[in-house]
Image (tube, rainbow, N blue to C red; front, side, top):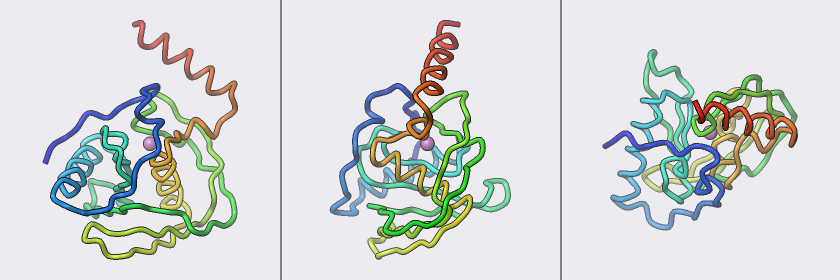
Length: 168
Ligand code: NI
């Protein structure tokens, strides 16, 4: 188990769609453990494998604040099979998009299908915060970042700010 480096925007690796996991072997279990360590260390509410440089379709999340009690959830090959309604995700942020938060339009409730780390089929009905976290992480697995949901102008302003920050 290890804390891994989190890739950050504009790293091109974050832009590639991930590949489905075909065999949940020891290597995959190790990646999941590293993802959990990295997420809790950050800390964040969710993490996608692509963020630590692995191009497999795996996400982890924990809807309970880490200082209360850990409840790690793993979804392998997640797919949103149904969604309903709309909400504004206020001040959404991402461990791969430093120093930036913005409001994002998301579905209010979703139905996700995938597999747990033992390979058992999984169905998750989520709404509100959990629905936001799952949509955000599934976006990552499709090469998408939350800033892609914003206007081109907002994204451009963020890019400029980031350049300035990195010069310092
Ligand atoms: Ni993110």
